[in-house]
Image (cartoon, rainbow, N blue to C red; front, side, top):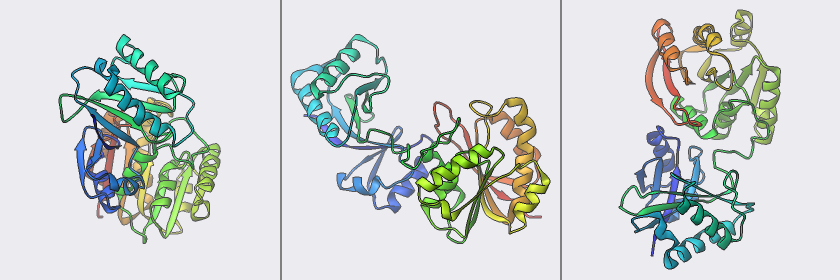
Length: 344
């Protein structure tokens, strides 16, 4: 019989900070595996599901077989079907899909079709909500089957009712906020807030003296307000239209007091922005953060403009890098910089 447990997927590159959150919530015994953690005690699952940095949670089954074809064998297949049916009974699913290396191979397509038929769902390889993943087991010579516990990933928040191109993954936003530091006495600013992911995740994480976000695009600010209302934090958040390259706006915003913590998901020149424009924008972003930050402020910035970001960091006098890491985000591995204000 296969060995069963639970697997928690976190953004690759965030394992250390994600472990700290899980342990803070009471999930003490964790085994780290590629892409996340296995729970040593299944009783910790309810605690772990409260973690904001968990991108998805799965039932994990390890089959001691040398090849995926063996999963079609009678005993293995019956065990797999029983497990998948148990997950399917917990929610509303319109279809099943299989994610695996070589998912279009004859063995994988046969397995996916047979499993969908046995569970009583259509096989919808493009958009099936019941996700079954298959990979070599990281700890044995067998194969691991992962069945996601929810129709949507945990990182797809219920409050996200308005989407914008290039929106930040909420689990990555939670990681950034934790790296920047969380204190109820902080004043917090999200520059270029877009649909509000960083700001809303910070509001949901803990109290703060002030929570502010701005964006140059009025439609983005309206989108952030809609999401903040869905998250029931709109009354705690100040959202405004503003251009960080406009010294008059920066001066007005800072007049009510400088900020202890600032975050930004800068344009990458991919879904949002353009590479040529970013060369002019990034130095101004650092300057605006310096003008708005308190003397001992922290600034957490994410971008996939790796060369540009490193070049600008090296040329500007206001911020020193305390920590850097790359995290998985939508097929990219953007850089996260945690910086502190250089003392004048």
